Every structure is written in structure tokens, then in C-alpha cells.
Image (cartoon, rainbow, N blue to C red; front, side, top):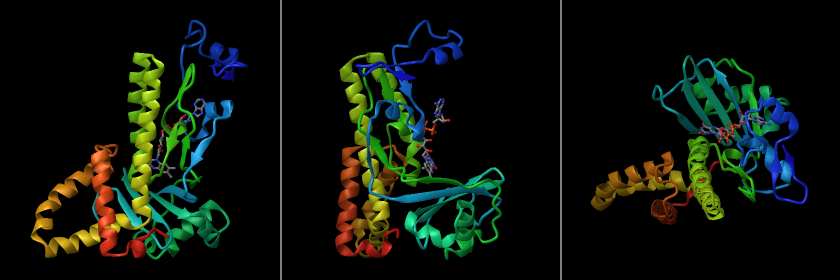
Length: 287
Ligand SMILES: Cc1cc2nc3c(=O)[nH]c(=O)nc-3n(C[C@H](O)[C@H](O)[C@H](O)COP(=O)(O)OP(=O)(O)OC[C@H]3O[C@@H](n4cnc5c(N)ncnc54)[C@H](O)[C@@H]3O)c2cc1C
């Protein structure tokens, strides 16, 4: 790809057109960048991105086995520092740790040392994965929270991580990417600037919602709302009565079904803030 000088347009290089074996009859009308964290097109056009506030490192690999409280379920666990996922796969488990980058040096110099030592030394992981044998290399991602300053131009559009990514918690990434693709297809069908603006607005709104949801996870308000809610259920019949409705409703937020609904997010916001007034969520913060 290359920029057409003096315009906001891009085009495929002759080399790329040749490699496509004349698939296109000339230049395509629209180029969609779905290159993920690589952000090929934004780098080419010098498009900036707004970074999120977190400075985490994610280390992840597959191990042969771990303890699972519920077979087949994705497990999300608070660690001494940060949090961890365990995703059971066929004959193996994906184990990842998301940790403030400043905590990592004490676990070793390389990503492999850090990962293997965390499995053995973190007080939570050592209970569930002390004897786990790593069977893949370790992957490392850092500072991944960002939202692109622009998401479409005259003959291009961004979709998926290259448009924006918030956080691995609650696995919103693939969902946002897929939803973005459906919205973008709709804009392409309508083929007007208004439709592309709408696409960008929707993507930004949804990324903003997930940012807020992730914040409640990290600052302890989410766990606190569960703990306070359970106590209130014991005490007040009305809360007990309402509880299934809340659980069902919030389940839809965390699975994505209602994660961009103003009503659902507003309700979640109200609950986490109300319960934070009953008990200080500080102790449940992810450190
Ligand atoms: C630590 C971590 C854990 C995560 N865990 C989860 C999870 O459990 N569940 C979940 O839903 N999401 C998770 N995500 C997010 C998820 O991985 C991404 O949101 C999702 O993969 C984004 O999809 P994408 O298609 O935009 O980009 P990608 O999946 O990165 O795909 C981009 C593709 O473009 C290709 N590419 C790049 N440059 C070029 C080029 N020049 N030419 C041709 N091809 C190119 C790449 O090879 C790649 O195949 C996680 C993210 C992180 C950081």
C-alpha cells in the first residue's frame, strides 16, 4: 500500500496488484485495514491513537494442564499482582497473566523466565498451576489499550484491533472486531460519508463502553458490587427478588449482548457506584 501524495487516499502498489494475479481490474474502490495490532494503514498515514491509562504486560502460553474449578469453563482469577486467565482447550490450557509491567523484573529477565516463575511463585497460580508444563513459547503484549484517532478516510477504513482495542478481560476483542465488520459492511452497502461516520461513532461508543466496564473490573468496584450485593440479598427480600433480574441483565453486558446499551451500562454504573458507597472497593482492586 502507498499514500497518494496530496490526498487522503491510498492505493495498492504495483507489486501487490501483481501478487493478486489480476484479481482486481485496477485499483480497488475501498481498502479495509484489518491488520490488528500492526496498524499498517494508520502507520502509513501517520494516524495517531489515544492510549488507555493502563500500562500492563500480558504474558501467555499453553500448558499441559491446570486445576479447573469447573471443567470447560474460562477461569478469570485475581493474582498477587494483576490477574490471570485459564482457558481449557483440547488437551491443554491457555494460561495468561496480565500484570503491571513494573512488577515483572523480579520474576526474571526473559519473558519465558517470568512466565514460568509466575506459575510457581504467585500465591494464587501456585495453587492451580504449580506443576503445569509449558508446551508453547511465551507470547508477550504490552500497552495494548488504544483507540485510533480516525477510522475511515476517502477510500479506506479500519476494522478490529487496528481501529481500537481496550483490554483482554471479558474477551471483548473478537466480539468488537466481528461487530465492527458487520457495521462496516453496512456502511459499505450504503456507501455514503454519513454511513461511514455512523460506523465510526458506533465503534467509538462501543469501545468507550468496554473501557468503562474494564475500569470497574480493575478498580475493584465490580467485585465489590457482587460482595455487597450478596450481603444485601441476605438482608433485604426486595434485593433478593430483584437479584435474578440484575444477574441476567449484567450477564448480557459482560457477554457483549448488551455491552453498548446505554440503559444496561447506566444500570451497571449505578449499581457499582451505589455499592461502593456501602463498602470501600479499594481492597478488591487489581494491583
Ligand atoms: C493478551 C491478549 C489476550 C486476548 N485474549 C482474547 C480472548 O480471550 N478473547 C477475545 O475475543 N479476544 C482476545 N484478545 C483480543 C483479540 O486477540 C483481538 O481483539 C482480535 O484478535 C482482533 O482481531 P483482528 O482481526 O482485528 O486482528 P488480528 O487477530 O491481530 O488479525 C490481524 C491479521 O492481519 C495479518 N496481517 C498483519 N499485517 C499484514 C499484512 N501486511 N499483510 C497481510 N496480513 C497482515 C496478521 O498476520 C493477522 O493474521 C486478546 C488480546 C490480548 C492483547
